[in-house]
Length: 449
View 1 (tube, rainbow, N blue to C red):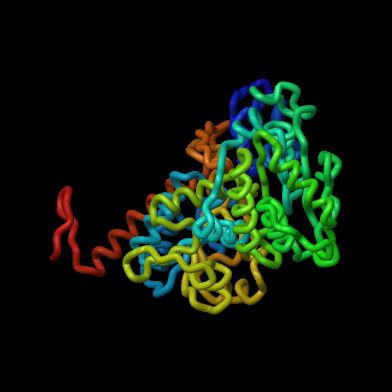
View 2: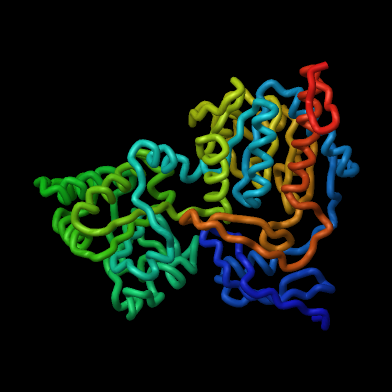
């Protein structure tokens, strides 16, 4: 270890949706790496420790190193020439970069989508149809005496969710922390999170909707046939006990994960848990929130929503934003062969999309912006290497409870950040579109030639 050490206090971990902003990072400036991450969970420590500065080029076209300017020009030309270009990813970059991506999509009349469409997209549909009784994680820490996790495994995916917000921390109205709380876990199998719970309820796979609807009926005082156990694997007595706990708590919260959104029922499941929350507010204070994965996936939803009116799967082909999951979501546009150019930002769909979608990606020009070499960047026509948000660049991200967090960088990177690259692409794309339309740029204005 060198003597050139820097301590960064109140840094932000952008690995998961908890976006913990109480990190204390010890940085070796000579070796350009983080050697210690105080307060980080096991996932956060790995995130910081594994981050190193690569030695690959800033920009490549068809695997050959080029200047950043050449790559920007090629990207702009590719996007403008395309008839159905798509932009996807955005969940592991700053809100400032996300804004530029939305602007590019608008200018080229393309389609923009985020990783939400393959995780909590169904929840986005349910929000619009049912509504959401929501809160901040700080409220949960200070007030919640009943915490229910449904279809998630925070011990593995969000380790500090328990310790920082929901189970063990002492709060303003929860002075004894864990002793003042009842924790319930609902899932199809016992996970590493189960030992934390006071009550574990095991549901038959694919039967979450039936359980949620039965709970709604019981909350409203309706009778449920005991045969519900044969259907769902949960006894009527267990359901009645849970309803009693929910109706008699002071402040209850329902957290739900992809065990609801990516299984049978999808947005009906999300809608059911939100409707149950609404029902419970006739008796006590109850809130609900999806437990989000990627560091700034919530920010991507927020930016798209306040820029276009919709959270993901937005198409500008007609000159105004349209929202239609299943038509404009990326897995679908690629699988059908609709897209004729694609720009992937801080995401690696070539490693996890369906085979038919990946095969189509290989047939069209792909632009990749990522902090590391991936399956997607390896097949890309144009590949940019960028710096890592929260480690090398500052900016804004949103925590899973829609609270914006301002980041500070730990050390500099020789690579540009996503916002810089996307801003340059946007500028060049606008020039090409204006030229196509016969618009010349005068000093401080645009005029038709």
